[in-house]
Length: 306
Image (cartoon, rainbow, N blue to C red; front, top):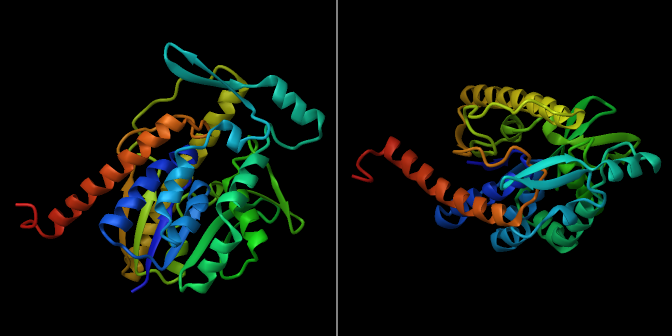
């Protein structure tokens, strides 16, 4: 038996995945051999492989825009109590004048990764029989790549985590090995199939979207918000494709697949990092996982909760 934990992309919504993982690993004592993450999932899997749930919670409930962006392309303001995101024209213009290829820069995230995924942690992972895999999109070669802790140096692994998290063109572009890399979610938002190809026989997959679309988008008012809507549309369909392929592969290989969706829409802009909301999402993820596991137990053993 080889158990895998798969975590999808989702930016700030990763806090919800942390709560789910905490319940599964601490309360259900689920022990995983393989951890596969995309985007925000890539940022989480090293801590999860070492059982560092408290440290991961501290990280995910204390980040903000400044800890992610060295040049923030967003301007966030409150309108009738709600956060409204628009383009920061000055910061974006500054990036273009400096010859950057993106609207914003996420170099602070690279520093955050180095500070929180230490060389010691990486070496400890390599000493165990656990494998940590992060997903990146190679824009130059037009293909998805999976980078394993078994095959990388520490510095390279930090680069791959950063590249997997970079939602271009709003964040930095990773240029490495004569190629340009971006968010792994552009090609594999939910890498269930990769976990199966690496030998997983049972998979817990945390998907940071609702199972059914629950909202209609507000009509775009500027090119910036339109670009966001187009990306969201494409990624929603990438996600559905990934899940369909993953389910088919699981059925074909006889793999047990447990899927955990978010029960409600957490946010319409996952690049806004609000500490208060992320603390709330972590708690709701923990509670949701508990109710989901009880539901599964009832499904397979109706007498358990009677």
